[in-house]
Length: 78
Image 1 (cartoon, rainbow, N blue to C red):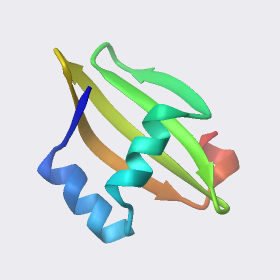
Image 2 (cartoon, one colour; image 1 turned 120 degrees about the vertical axis):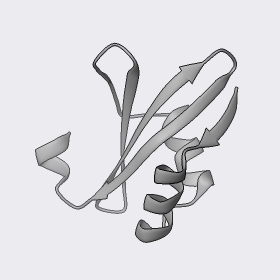
Image 3 (cartoon, rainbow, N blue to C red; image 1 turned 60 degrees about the vertical axis):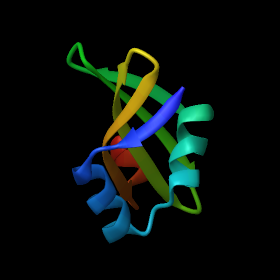
Image 4 (cartoon, rainbow, N blue to C red; image 1 turned 30 degrees about the horizontal axis):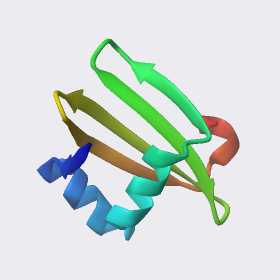
């Protein structure tokens, strides 16, 4: 599937120094998968003492990244 980024997600990635490659790794091999409501998928993966959280929607053959969170509060969110 093709991955596209909302303007909000792109802004958060820039602010948090998260690359598109890191997002692809989380989607390909998440540590935890959940849902937020009926539309959003939440994937989480630990990396270098931080937790990377990716929230997205699947639209036909596209994954649209809604937002990206990079936190050191691993135990709070995992």
